[in-house]
Image (cartoon, rainbow, N blue to C red; front, side, top):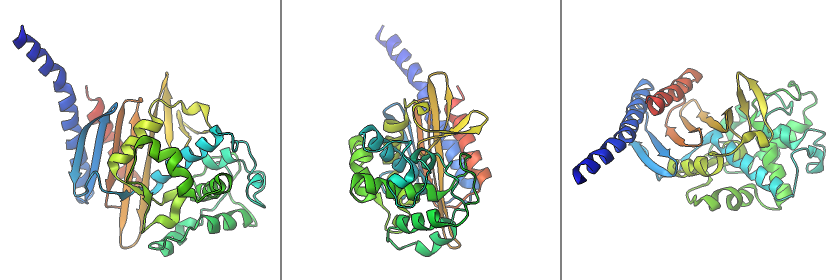
Length: 310
């Protein structure tokens, strides 16, 4: 009887171990296709960490997470809404003088009509400078004589999150990061998060750093089980929406959440990827390379194959 029970337990554990092995294999193959940059990947099922694949980065060492910072900003804004301190349908001019009728919900979903994204050229100049640039970006964005975007239509723009970061400071009465850490990060036991000494000037749209393991805690604790239809979202077509700093797709009573981050310069590049599938499977990766959209799609597809092969 004991031998039979041991055999059953071994067989029950085998698919999970095979799944982790597949994830590690696909991750290493993808890194090789990108020229073997340093990287790290964390894989969790529920609250259980199954894999921390160190390929040159320590999973507990803080690394820049680029546009994955937007998830922190959006969750922070949502916390202020839940506290009754602001509302998604608040016009921007309630909080920022001259902000006009753009709503906070439009900022968080990139449907404000702010365009073009003038952070793109400036970010190289701001690299290594921790001056908080979101006030400057906001002033430029809302003072632009003619917006080239269409309000109500999705157009991904860092300026939206720069403005949202300034609103958070106005509403909370504190610096952006000081307002968001106790509302988003500390309740999840995240200890490595802070604005990056290299990219911290990008703050609300791309300035955070933290360990990959901690960002996995964020994905698991904040997005797994969330119904993103209860908060503002933009329809991108094909069943894909953009919500609280994340892309998502709903299926029955669950949602998949994912996002990429990238910082690309002439002499350096880095990227990050975070996904939670079906409220159950969490994967977060960081890598020391600037990769194109095709490579991002390939990483998403490779990890999905590994997780769902059974």
